[in-house]
Length: 207
Image 1 (cartoon, rainbow, N blue to C red):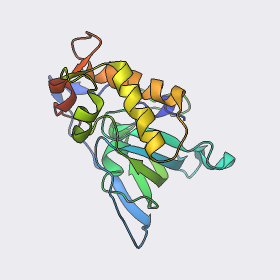
Image 2 (image 1 turned 45 degrees about the vertical axis):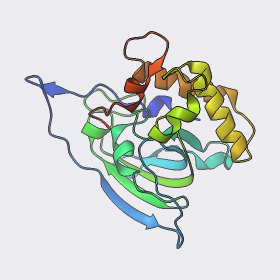
Image 3 (image 1 turned 90 degrees about the vertical axis):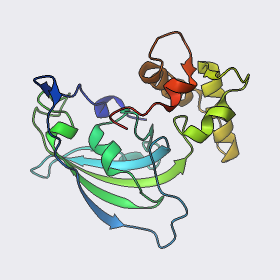
């Protein structure tokens, strides 16, 4: 899983307000004939992706090692750049899209790593699989094992483990720990080590 270079920098603001946002240009390259489910905020997505600069130079591909470099992430919690959270909604498993993402929805004025400041980026993204994610509202009661209306990190990781078993996959402790850490970093607003039902279900601006 390669998440570090996809993390979003802070949103710039002027006079206390957010800058007007540009749009993600989305093109469907392939869509399966049968679509049983479409992606939504809170879902966990498994994707392959290639990233290109405006001049067509590729800066990243996950295709080089078969499925080993396919990436899991949770849609809508800013685990990846905002252009992905916007451009990968309502997508079917097996669908492939081209996303052209302006700097304000990617890495902005700062850039990151090999990404220069003010870069417009193009991604070819293939969605391999959709699973219920720990941010989906319908998951809260299933995750709250002791019915105390708050979630511990262990409860979140146990939910992820059960989801993997449900779909016939072996547990992935490294992924579970990474996803749980990211969720608690963003959603445990009072930093008490738990996510309350209000913290879990509250709709943030970016969602």
